[in-house]
Image 1: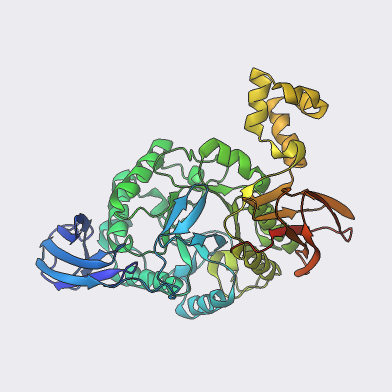
Image 2: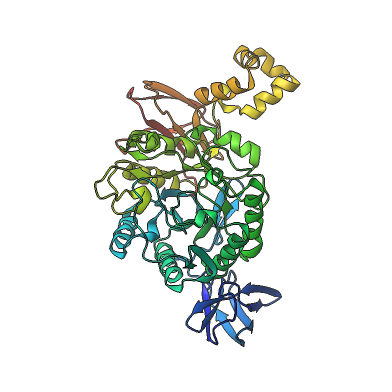
Length: 516
């Protein structure tokens, strides 16, 4: 047993009577004064398994009861700080994320919906591509997907089928074994798997399981997978396009997943049109499909949780408007979201006669954005902590702040600002629209670092207001050409910086001698 890694106990026994998904099997693990009880599962062919995720090093006593029994002791070795896999489960930390070992985790994701439903050769190719890609989170589905460029049948399905009905009490071990192998591969690469539990793009009947069968499915999935450290749960991809489930059903699914996951992985729900209510206590972060990535501050203000734009459209050239934005636009959305204190997810949809598009099936990356996303990731990974939104001028305010002033009156200092007072005369919708145009994508790590993205501005000069104490080094960054140049050193206070008069420039100011 090793800290932050899945520990597995295997037993042989008789095939269970009745359900193969909800068997009578529990494991109790005790280390010192802490005891955790987990549900085991039937893995087929007379094999029962109990899995456990040890978050603490030390000696554990374990006891298994139910269809099979056993007990023993196991020493859990401490995680190796130099081992890339020994970081633990990602947890929410304020408006950001940390591994259990305390290191910051900054999600730079990508989407491959039908990743695990392809032929082995194609999945292998995808995994090789991910080894050198900048992404540390992958969104993919449990159930196969049917949509444009998604017309193939998988080799295995999650459950057996009888007379056209999926038998959720009879899981197919071959499918779940293959899924687990791929999740483990992602873990070995330091990649989080953002596992999508339901979705509407279906011709097999999984989108209409019904609530009772859905609970059985979720129970089995959590018994098998919750001990794997590199997983997040996404209740759905586009939950609001699934007419067989009501809003209340999704709330119940969120409560069920949180209650039956002993380890508290990150959990959210993904929209097509209407955002999920991220204030639901079981939901850990905001998972957004939208293009308005500079509204991170409003979402943080409203929900008090990390904000991830997991779908902001895709770099590509297919007929659909959501799948044909340019690489420059994809990169801009990453920079804007990150400098506003949030996170963003990539996707790629370049037309191909063989219907192998990255967003659906994986394969190889063809676009120009991944290299630039890697460049951004390299920059923010150098920072001493996550970026918090700072903004400047009118744009540093949030819609919530201005709407509160509209309702309750502006404070005396604001009454002298005729721009702000004019904004208070706008309608609520216009306030949000105006702010999104005026907002500067400027974030900071306390007083240690400041990062400003100029987006489409073609300025030849800009200014940055730095603290009056300490000295700063300033770099001008060409986000598209991936070039960094130090232009000023040992400066403080208000600093003017010359720019080349082109789009997609950024400014980085780092306090000299700061600890990273």
